[in-house]
Structure formats: structure tokens, C-alpha cells
Image (cartoon, rainbow, N blue to C red; front, side):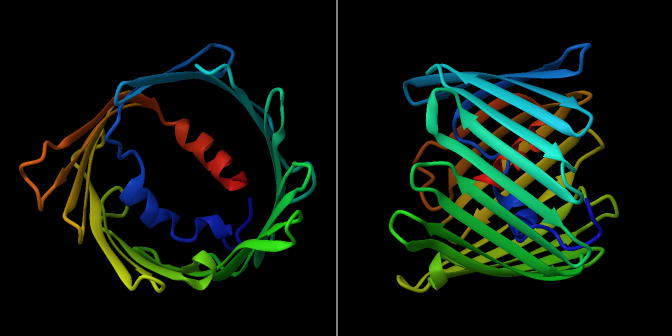
Length: 289
């Protein structure tokens, strides 16, 4: 929406997506279709252990608004409404579950050429308020966020971070968990289209003196097929193959192996056909949560 810095939630997102997005050890099938009226329909079935769940979602875009409705097997109906430019340089996101009056959330984002500001409120009897802000330029910016519980009168979280971006690389540092952890990550792109990349991330938990180091990356086999892999210092190796079967529909297969215990059966994950519009839905929901 602007040529300024990104949101606080964008700090570290590129590395996080490379190391976590689309990886799964559950059996999951997602199928997306589009109607002539411009409605995207997505149905999902998940089997985890002996439990099976599913949901049906619909998304409709009209001018500066997006309506997303999801119905799951437990009869929950979740709705997310996104409006752009109700006020200049703003985005408003509202989410709620029908018949659950404590589930409502409202977020307003403001974009400026040198700063961004997000305020999110959980609409409960005792609201929880989250505020985040960044300041800087698209290539380097600093940010912080805090959460405040009005019922207890205490902070639920406070986090700070810095983002540095160049044409072929990005680096992030985040101090989180109320100062108890620090996470640093680096992404280097291997081609101009940024479809192939290498990533490294290290996390330290001060209270337990625990360090976690993860390396990974993605490689574009061709314009339709993507391969991703990751390995951490605990020996967990994850591999993912994603292929665009038809335009905007992706087939994803992933699995995980414990390289320190080859006697254990590997976890074979999902065979999934999904729509590229899923990414937009995830971003919209993450921004308000």
C-alpha cells in the first residue's frame, strides 16, 4: 500500500516461510476451484492419527474488499472481512465466529512512507490489545510490538526486531518471549526471480541455554516445480516437493526423517492440491492473530 517499511509481522517472515510453510506430517488434501462469479472455493480434509477433520472455505473479492467464510466439521463458521482504504493508507481486518461473541477480532493497519502502525483488539469482555509499529525504509527498518491484557493489567508480550533487505538477500533479528529468546536468520537468493534461495536461522533461549540451528532452502527445478529442504541441529530433515498441476493449483508432497534415528519410520506428509490464493488468506488471518 506504500513504499515505506513493512509491517512488524513481516520481520523474519521470508525465512519462516522457507523453513516452515507447506511442510506437514499429516495426511492432508486441499482442492480449490473458481466460479465464473469470481468466488474461490477451497475444501480441505486432514487425517491426523485416527482423527479426521475437514472444512470448506469461500473467498470473494470485490473492489477494495475481501470476504472469507470457512465452515468446518464441528459446525464452526468463521468469517474474515478485509477492507482497504476505508481511510487513506489503511487496511481494516475483522474476524469472528458466528454465535461466539468472544471470538471477534479487529485490526487496523496504517501505512506511511517511513513507518507502519498496527492496532489489533480481541473483542472480549476484557479486551486484549496488541500494538506494533515499524520505522525506517523498505531496505532497513526497526520495529516493536506489545500485547496488553486489560483484565489482568499486564503485558502478554513485548518483542523487538530489525529487518535488513538487499536485492539478493535479507537478514532479520528478533528479540522475543519478553526478552527471553533471540532469533537471527539470513536468506540469500540464488536467482533474479527469487525462486531459489538458501536460508539459515539460529535461535537461543536464555532461560534454558538452549540453541537451535536450522539450515534449508528452495530450488526451482523448472517454472512449475519447486523443491524445499531443511535440517536442524537435532537431526530432523524435512523435504517438500511442490508442482503446479494447472494454473494456480499446486500439488504438494512433504515428509520428515530423523537422521539420528533411522530405525524410526519417516513421517510421510501430505499429498495436497491447493490454490495459490491460500497465501493471501493466510496473510490476512496472521495479521490479526
